[in-house]
Every structure is written in structure tokens, then in C-alpha cells.
Amino acid sequence: MDRSCCFGIIPRTHHRLLSYCSFVFLFFSLALFRNAASFNLTTTPFDDAYSPLFGDGNVVRSPDGNGVRLLLDRFTGSGFISSSMYQYGFFGANIKLPSDYTAGVCVAFYTSNGDVFEKTHDELDFEFLGNIAGKPWRFQTNLYGNGSTHRGREERYRLWFDPTKEFHRYSILWTPSSIIFYIDEVPVREVKRSEEMGGDYPSKPMSLYATLWDASNWATSGGKYKVNYKFAPFVSEFKDLVIDGCSVDPIQQVPAGACSDRHAQLEAQDYAVITPARRRAMRRFRGRYMYYSYCYDTLRYPVPPPECVIIPSERQRFKETGRLRFGGSHRPRHSRRGSRTSTPVDESEQADMR
Image 1: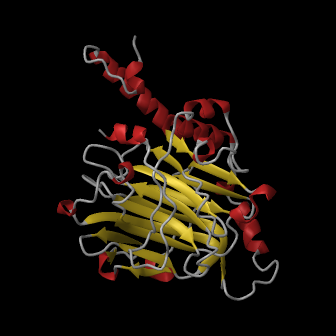
Image 2 (image 1 turned 180 degrees about the vertical axis):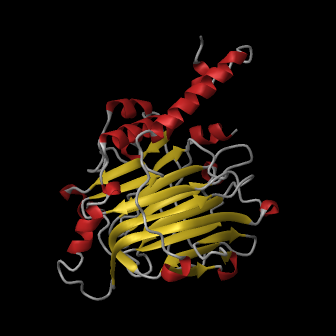
Image 3 (image 1 turned 90 degrees about the vertical axis):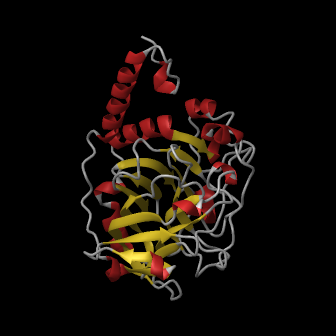
């Protein structure tokens, strides 16, 4: 049997292929979660740990107080921020993304200290990028350390589910030794700290942010498709928010060892360990759904950054990647935060949109 449909080619005359490929897709999706037990997490009511960041009227608390809806309309986007800053931690939320036509829309779930350390800020990002009707959401992860915004470390991916139909948990683990991005219990990216990274590894206290905003200039096919406010308001829902970390004042000098006990507790949690089963799930996810990695973008980085682990099969797959367009502040345009570095749009991504 011709199994080419599983790679995006569906011969019209082979009707039975659809059933076969549906089975393969279901099997793969289930395999991602096999042996992935739920993490033991403690959630915090919204008003106990968070407050609106901008667009207050578009930040709508849930009746039970455990979640919030962010809205984007023709007047403003919206966002919220944690009440405290944290020196390392685990940050997560169950999120459902806007549906239908969402081109130009960006939903961001991230940690940052840009409002305190404007020129030397650190950041860890989930950025969900909207799409035209009938095309799926995409997302990227990224990190900055010590203001290294000119050295973007973006990776881009597709999802194996529809993020507009139900909630999924997106989490960031940040410890002194490593960073792990999770979707549900599947690790999708790991960055291990090395001496060669130096200040590029995020190490200063950060707040948790979530924002919904107009990123028409870059989010969908490098800005080819803009936000269409005929479909507004765009709504993203957040619930079951989790923060587990050492709360600190970034201005005051933190005594050495002040957070050592919390760091030890953090690194003893189940989510701090990528088990062999999780490692296999991450390898399957990245092999099937990652379509760009800065580590293989030789136009940007003729020599890969020091944290990159070069995998021959991935290098072969991404050798013709080209460049994508990155950038954009998570805030409204009047924000003090500057835009990110951007590069020309990748033509293959544009072609995939058609």
C-alpha cells in the first residue's frame, strides 16, 4: 500500500489510504503520551498571584476565579503578569487558543524581566502564531539571556492537536542547570546550561506574563497575512495557573543560598527529569513537528551557538530551511520594550500557507 499520504501527499484514487493514515496519526499521537503520567501540580487563583498588565477591560476573570480570558479587539490587546518575580521556577497554564481566522494574532506565554533590566533582560517564550482560516496554529519557543536579543534562539513547530478545541497545558521549567519546555507532559525542547553560553543563559529573576496582541507585521507568513478585525474579538483562555519558584525582589541583593532550598525542591520534582520515555516522546515530536531550528540556520549562525546539540538527521532535514521572520514585543506599540531582531521571511513557510 502506498503510504505517501502520511507525509502530506494523498492520491485521490486511493480512498483506503485515508483510513490507514488516520490510524497512523492516531497511533503516533497516542504514542506521544504513553507512559506520561500527569504532573502533580498546585494551581493558584488568578487574583492571588496575578494582575492585569494592559487592556484591563479585555482581561476577564472566570467565575470561579481560577482562570482568565484575554481578548484582542480593534482597540487593544490584553495581558496579565505575576505579582512577584522568581529566581528560577516552574510556570504553567492550561490554554485554549482563538479559533477560525487568526492570521496576525500572537498569544504569548513567557517569563521576562524586561521592565526591570531593560538593556540586559532575560526571557523564555512560548509564542503561538495564528493562521488563515483552515490552516493550523503554529508556535515557537525562544530564550534570551542578558539582553542577547540579537542572538535569537527560536525553534518553530506544528501541533499534533487542534489547540482551539480544548485546553492543553503549556509549561516552562527554568532551573540553574537547564530549561525544559513542555506541552502537557511531553518535553518539546531542552536547553542545558554550559559555561560557553555565559550570560546568554537566563539567570536574573523573572515575572510570568501572558499576552494576546496584534503581530500582523511578522506572525503569519512573515507579515503577509494581517489581523482581520471582522473576526474580533479574538479570545484566548487561561486556567489552572501554576507558579512554583523562589520569589525574590530583583532590586535588593539576594543573599547567596537564599533560594537554595527552593531550587533543590524544584529539581527534585517529577517534571525536572526527562525520563527515557519522555526522551523518546520528545524525539518523536521534534522529528515530526519541528520545522525550524536556529541551530541549523547557517545563514544566521555559520557556527552553531554553544548549547546546540547537532543531530545528523536533523541537520540533513533542515539544510534548506532558509530564514524565517522573527520579532515583535509582546506589548502594545507604545510599550517601552523594543522590537526583536527580525530576518527575511522563509519562502517555504509562505508556500505552506497557500
